[in-house]
Every structure is written in C-alpha cells, then in structure tokens.
Length: 465
Length: 157
Image 1 (cartoon, rainbow over the protein chains, first blue to last red):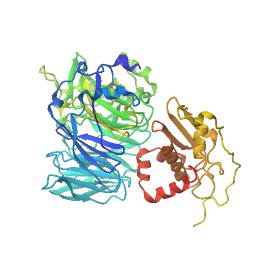
Image 2 (image 1 turned 90 degrees about the vertical axis):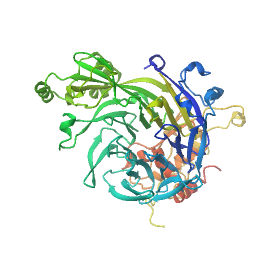
Image 3 (image 1 turned 180 degrees about the vertical axis):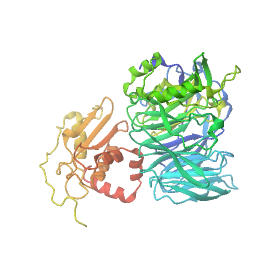
Image 4 (image 1 turned 60 degrees about the vertical axis):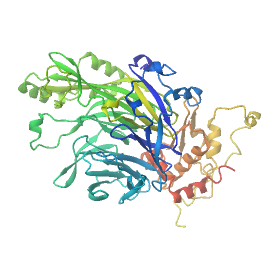
C-alpha cells in the first residue's frame, strides 16, 4: 500500500519534550487533556503543561508549519529542528526524581479530580502521589504486594478502584477506602504469564488485562467477587496494549505478533433485555489490522475520542455506516500508524428471518460485496474476520445522526468493521522504538496525540483533517 | 559451586580473528557498514556463565549464525546451547544482547534467538530474550547484572 497516496490527513509533530534521561515508557494525557504525565527508565515522573493552554484549542494548519509534507523525522537531519515552530510552548511543571527505586513503567491519573496519580515501578511498588502543603508532589501511599515488577496501574472511571498487574502473573484490585487509604479486595491469578497492561471500561467497573500469555481477559464483579468473564484468544504472541473505543463497546488490542485486533461482545439482544440475567457474552474478533503494516512488535494502541457516539456517515434501505474515529499504533519499527475505523451494519429483515439466517450459516462464509474482496486481496489470511454478519452481533449503542432521524441500532446486525490506513509516521522518535501513543481524552482536543520513545523524548502530534 | 549443568563440554578450536584489519579501520573519517564478522568478533569472546571458556570455544556462537542487514539496521544472532536442556541458555542470550546493546549504535534492532531445534524450551527462551520490558527489568537486577558483567569482562579487551 502506498502510504503517501492514500494519506487523507496530515500529522504534524508540534513539540518534542526533552528532559528524561532514559527511555520513556509511557506518556499519558490528564483526563481534561490539558497536561501530560510521563514515566521513564530514569526512575522519574514528569508532569508537562502548555505555557498557554489555548494552543490546544488552536486549529493548526500545515500552512503555518515550516514543512508542508507528511512528517518523517530523520534523526540525522537538521530538518528535525524546523519543527520547533510550535516548540517551547510546553514545559515541565513538575518532576519527581527517584519516584521509584527502579524504572517507572506506568502511570495513571485519579479520574475525577486529577489531583493525584498512581505510578507502577519495576521495584514492585505502586505509589500514590498528591500535592502536599508546599504544593509539591509527595508519595502518600505505597501499595505493596506484587512479588516483583509492577507493569501497569489503572484507576477506574468511578475513582473507587485501582488495579495493578505485573510479572508475578497477578492482578490486584484495590478499593479506595479513604483519601490515601487503599485496601486490596481481590487478587486475580488466572493469567499464566506476566500481565502487561490493564484498562478499565469507560463507564462501567469492568477491567481488561493484556498478557504475555497471548490473551486478553475481561474481569467483572459479582457480589464483591471478581471473576474472569471472557478470554479473548487470537493473538499469537504477547499482547502489549489495549484500549476501548469511547462507547466501551469495542476493544482494540495490539501484539508482538504484529497485528492489532478489534473485539466486541457477541451480544444478540437489545439493551433492555441484556440487563436481565444472561450468560456472559463471548468476545469475538471483528477486525484484524494485519502484520503487513509492521516489521516489529506493536507496543501501544489508542482509540481516538473524536466521537463519543459513533457518527452516521451513510444510510441506505439495507445498511448504515458509522464512523468510529481513529486508532493509532506505536511499534518497535519506529513507526506510528493512524487508521480510520468505520463499521457497516445491515438492517435486519425481521426477527424470525435473521435468527434462522444466523443458525444456518457458518462464520467463515465470505460476503461477495466489493469492499470485502478488496480486503481479501490485501491480506488473505485475515480475511475471515472481515465479514462478521453471521455472528448476528447487535451493537446496541446510541449513535450521532447529526440531527436527522433517530436510528435504532437494535434493528441492525454488525456486518463488518473496516480499517483504513490514513497516515504513517516512520521514525516518529528517530531510529528508536515508540513505546506509547495516546489520543487526547478530551473530545475538544481530540486531534492531539502524545507519544513516548526510547530516544528519552516525548513528542506531541496534531492530526490535521 | 553445585554440579554443573554440562560438566564436560566439548571444546572447539578457535580462530585468532575473523576479519582482516585494513588501514580503513584506523581511519576515523571512514564509516564502514557493520558486517557479521565484526559482530562475531564482539560476541565470540563472551565467557560462558558456567565454564572459564568463551562462547566460541564452546561452539555456542558461530560466525555463520550471525546475520546483519545493514540497510534495515537489523541483526539476528542465533546461538547453540551446549545441551538441549541447558538452564543457562537465557542468561547466555542476555549476555549476547547486552554485549551488542553496549557496542552498537542505537539504530540497530537486535534479535537474539536459540538455533532452531537446539533447546527443549526454544520458544519460551526466544520470547523472553526478545521482550524489551523483561530485558530492561533484568538489567536493573544487580545480581544478574554482576553475572552478565563477569561474562562480558573478556569481550572488550
């Protein structure tokens, strides 16, 4: 695929934040999208903010930029410097040196007030940080229990729970019982290898874990007991990273097997019915971004927050198409890729007919639509996931019809989830691995991205549509 | 020390050096692409963690199992454990990786693997050796790093 020709948007590197003295493992946005927190192999945590936050609201046009082309930073070239047009608009406002005794692998904000944050270290500790009377960040609590490296920490959207995971194969769930008081409520030991990353569902207390054992697991609570409600098997190597779409109905995972996969629960009934007791839905892979895009391990994936409700882009008698925003990946081949994600949903003929149809067709059956043939020719081995109509999945979510007639998603069956490579940034951090990528969580600033690399730097990117 | 995993390894003949030194090697203005013999010259002198012998003497590393793709800055090293259940295999692989990390420009992407069919836990060892997070964590482990440094003490002389 010729990237330059298919490029439908431009990605501009507006800033490079220097300061860390070792590889930067992760850089995340504060939930309001107006600050960045980073952690590094140099054992420090840094908080960065724009000198004037209005720069985030600016619409950046390439005409403002010194180089009007797709971004391809060559580490050996002086061109790198010409991106400083927007530079020095960000500064490090807080730096916690020796935040852990070893590398700091992961960080996350308290999701309600953002006043505190948690960090996970290779020293086996999870530290909770907040400002003291001198307005300096201080570690108020250390969560201990993991036998060795803690690899990820995630704070639930409600603010009540914190989850940690690590090389000891376990996931610990902690309840926030007081301002700086945490109590372990569950230790989940079902992964057979290191647990690499945790995320929470955007609105519910559902936890998702990614592991070196090649699986993703979904964890839920029932009467104070946490249990594994689904195992997502399909990746052929370590799953490094996961992210939900803004609705929480789709999950994306990326792996050392050089693919990214989109998953959804195989629900076949509408919401009102789903609330009643039913068996746990199986999660199925509905789309695979194939290995042909990558040469080395995919370390990070992020789903953009452009549309909190998927946007209706096409409607006909038989089907509708929805825009789900973008997915960005970061990989060990120094690259960042941005894909546009859309889905097609087929109108059900009638309840009786569609049920019968589901039963009589095998999952592997190919659709003969033109779009699918295109996909098949591109990567044969992954073609079976392109058409998922026969799963009979009902994606019962609110969608944005931009004021036109409301559409009841319960009348539609998911036909396919489609990805379209819209931009590749080779050498996003020079000749170094890109360890993390994150879209800004604030819909207002949805075009901003932050990445972290083995070059000790953090890069800030703007998507020009 | 407890009984060695492989108490009587076969010792192989070694070469003095694999590559000829040319005047260009002393010319700082001339940057030459790194080739496989240069890589091999680094790793052949790593000392085995168990025996006072080099990886070359034990035939763990061989020149023909070093692949260099300069154009794509990619290096693949395959090593052969002395016995198929060698518990030192992961440590040997780590030593090779650290040796190269310390010697090569950062643009090189390095894979270190067990020669196919030469170890019972080949896949598990390969996965671990090429997991950057595990390698990073291992390099912060003081005890482990001491052992690695010992093995590498014979490399840069």
